[in-house]
Image (cartoon, rainbow, N blue to C red; front, side):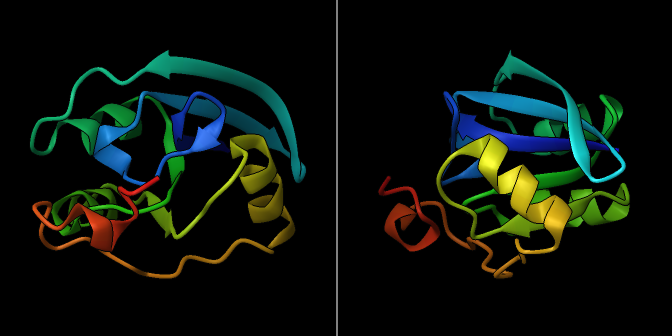
Length: 120
């Protein structure tokens, strides 16, 4: 299974669409088998969720995310985990153990960035 993390370098990004990069983690049997970082190709409505799904992501981990992106991920069958913080690899390992659970917090208005974790 491929897990994508919205990141600022190696740290989970506070907001999905404004991350610097995405780290794709290939996993098998509850362990990480490969890791690849790709630059964020650009934040525009509807693009990033489809980009990640088209690249095989079955799970997306982020600090916060807008409702439109969540809807597209849901339509594409990609599990959304928001509320994560800290090191991206550690977050994926916690997810694989069942210790990382989504807070379900969705950003509804990007003008109020402080409400969706953009303060990091």
